Image (cartoon, rainbow over all chains, first blue to last red; front, side):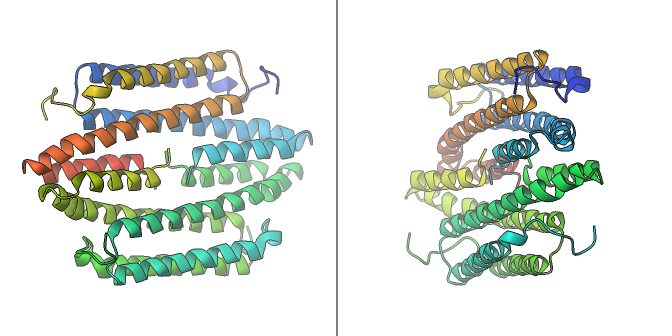
Length: 97
Length: 97
Length: 97
Length: 97
């Protein structure tokens, strides 16, 4: 796949970037909590929030990727099977049983 | 979707059924452990194994479904978008962040 | 740990067994759906339900184990550290990132 | 719990902070990939890595919290039950079935 391709997230680019910016801020916040010797459970709660937010960003991106890149490859009859294999690899990464 | 459809798991039907049979046996085994007052951690280990085996069966079925039903719908230009929405709903069920 | 020990789930034994009985029935139901060539996504939805029900049984058992066995070992000053290591192993099994 | 308490992660503070610094860098890297219109699947792979790294940090912190704060509360006979309830809430957050 060339480094740039007609990506599926074009329309949501700024929304995607602002959510990632927020996650970046959350992680800096957790570092501050540790420097301030904050209670472990409060830190763990923030780590769970970062994990969950990252997961949501991934699901949105997976949704737009499937509706665009996978669909396009299948309807054009180009590399459809390869795209499905790729899709399943991503699903396995995000669904460790 | 009619109750019977040209399902994607036809070729693996017996393999799928025997794996589910094994999971059924594992669940009965856990009930026996509880009746025998077995140690909680040993029971928890078996429950983790059932969860993981169930997850693997689902991933295999998801893989064949995507390579057949979703692909077919997209290449025939029938209900491709609906199939992708359905696929993403399943992925969300199996990837609770 | 001896095969029988003063387990923590004594009081909930029948509730635990009946939930596992139900999961066993769900798995038999999924086998029937496959024999009847049912639609993949309907089967995947049932597999997600089995996974989730198994997970809930495990969380309940983990809760009672921690409130009894782990607590007892720590308050009696017996094998507290070992019990905590065991507890973390179980948590790792159920939280594959 | 007072904002500062004799936290359990004292000894690993710098290791914890450097791992979080790395995760922060990974998140910035993902933002750069999106700005550069990189392929969705490459971005999804990085998001999975962030999730997994965050999960590991949490497991380490949970381990030291249980071996120190929970153990201390139980052996001193102070708020042991409350600490176990707190622990189980955290486990539930990190094990969404």
